[in-house]
Amino acid sequence: MNEALFKYILRIGDTNLILGQRLSEWTGHGPFLEEDLALTNITLDITGAAKSLLEYAALVEGKGRTEDDLAFLRNDRQFFNVQITELPNGDYARTIARQVLLDCFDFYFYQELSKSKDETLAGIAQKSLKEVTYHLRHTSAWLERFGDGTEESHNKVQLALNELWQYTNELFEMNEDDELLIKEGIAVDLNLVKTKWEKHISELVEKSTLTIPQNVFMQTGSRKGIHTEYLAFILAEMQALPRMYPDAKW
Image (cartoon, rainbow, N blue to C red):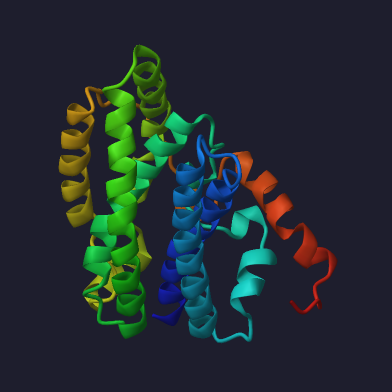
């Protein structure tokens, strides 16, 4: 069961790590100062969760690796983040559309994970839930503002939803690790999360005068370490310094 737990924690940690790295690209480039700071704070929360999760994953693995080793010394096929997190930010409407889809997922996911029999995972989830409650409120307000704003803002955010929707089903995929850990009361049954997520997103999208794409081919592969071409570029930038100076102390 240790191997399944390690992979499970790693998957959640990787998703947070890569999303945090992507969002950090907005730092200093937000549409105005207050929003620049808001998104930077969201990024810090997500990256903080990644650190806690990868630290715990390293402990569960028991092979002497640290959270830094897991973050900086693996290649793209050894990462298990969902693919939507590695996609380019695009314009601000696209970033918000991606973020609200993920924030909504995290809100219901951490609600369930906070009930886990694994006390460490439950503790991380409880802390993250407090943070993501704010994230979801913030990004939902922006989605409404874009969707029910000008013709240009409406079209941009609708286009973003159309392009991103194909990656959403991957959030809810489960494998044998999930099945084992669900039986032990550790992991989250993502079918429960999906039902709540679909209802919430449908209501939010309708309120924003937008439409959910229909008959979309859904992407898959991250559970097996299969990714878009963008992940390797993210890792090349993120890992360059630690790989160049592996013994450096900060």
